Image (cartoon, rainbow, N blue to C red):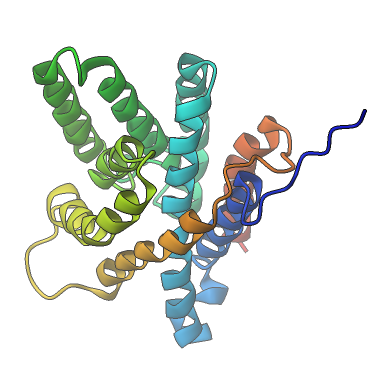
Length: 247
């Protein structure tokens, strides 16, 4: 007797991952001179706001993955290896060269978020002092080593993970949490002086637009491509951006 598995309405993790990847690629290619504000005008600013959704989508998928993975150690180790491999290409493509220390690629951010979740599970119930000390250490690390999303990359995934079984509260608290974490990211993480916020700072508030995608998530994996594709795509597309930047 054949058992039919009913497909739930909504978006699977595979679809959400694809959306995040497409938005990330658009944003990274917008750094090339052909797509500068002088050439494409207001379209540059529109895409910059829209593509802010990419990172929180990756974080949301990470939270879901951390809750269900069979081996967190292997998952975190993969993130570390990919972060190290991707860093020279990231620096070459988007910052000021392969040896840059001005900014570190998004795999370091995801690693920090994953470690925050692991620290929570290991110490929250048994040793809250150790939990807060280690969490503070991750926040300091994210600032000192110039992770792309600084403190936000530690606290946002932790917030979503803690509330993963309380979806309505998770969505509700995301609305005030994003502005607070963005302010911490810029004023503490990046050391931006207090004053009139820039467009790029305000654009990060568009991360709140991730909420509808989270609500549409149906809890299913969907049709998955091989893991090596998802992990290898990041340095591969950055290499293309770097090479195009030479033209």
